[in-house]
Figure 1 (cartoon, one colour):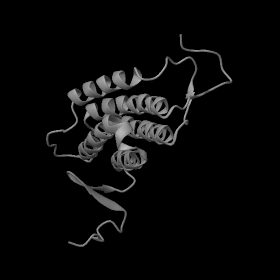
Figure 2: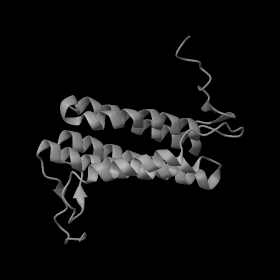
Figure 3: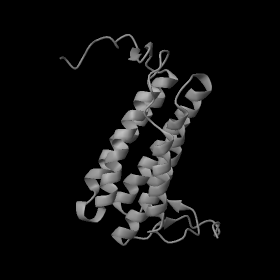
Figure 4: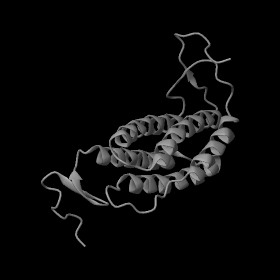
Length: 185
């Protein structure tokens, strides 16, 4: 099988149910989700297996689920069963709570940074927020799996909790936004 097909040379691509413009909102939504997935691999290569075994395991699950989310988002017209479910969202909430317990209480807004792992996780967080925005736009215009939107919303929170936990594990302080007052009590 050749890697190139030449079928996209005119600016169209295939989705489940037909062909669409490569810059269609549906393609933007699953393409941005794919960007998140690619950057999760960047996080994984930065992690020492002994210090981050739980995160490595969870992020590996997330990579597969992001691929599922992309598949759900790539469906136009004829629908098959969706892969992303409410149970996946519930599990993300459990993981958020677990990682959040590792970090001190938040007093101020947190800036991206600290350790290299935390920085990469913050990048995943902002990429996920962008993917979520694309899915919100898509869901206003076309039918899609609403659980993907919920999943991405929760996933960005998980990346934030993991980033803070990573700083704790590295013995590095979170970078607080110092121009504001304490906003969390």
